[in-house]
Length: 190
Image (cartoon, rainbow, N blue to C red; front, side, top):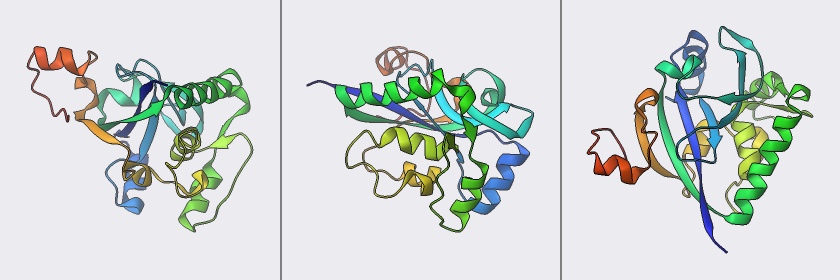
């Protein structure tokens, strides 16, 4: 059976809400998303439905050149999975996307994590809980409940490989091979 790559995107948008979260977490990156393509054409997460309102959220499909991501800094990691795991992950995201109006942002879960409470709410996620739920399809990757996973926990997973760090707007939309051919001077990690 073959292997495929998935991509985990950690971002800092620099908004007031993000800075407040940063004060608590002491982490540089407090939003996480998942993509199934190195070009990051389709990025999925749970977050703001309206960029100007941090309190109304749900399932979102993000674009690297739009909204809060236009000025974001990021770290992008890849993770090797089997073709079967890849399809299971992608199908789980598609199922949520098809019923996205039924899903909400898990603000209560976000507060519960502060007290290490394993709070599960039907059809509700915060960003790292969503990504961790999708990553559960790769056996042996997570050692605790997705309800308790913070972005920093995901970043520490040994199976992730850092492939890019810097301004998201400068992320190469070409493959790493194209990037190297053109000698693009970015912080790309091999």
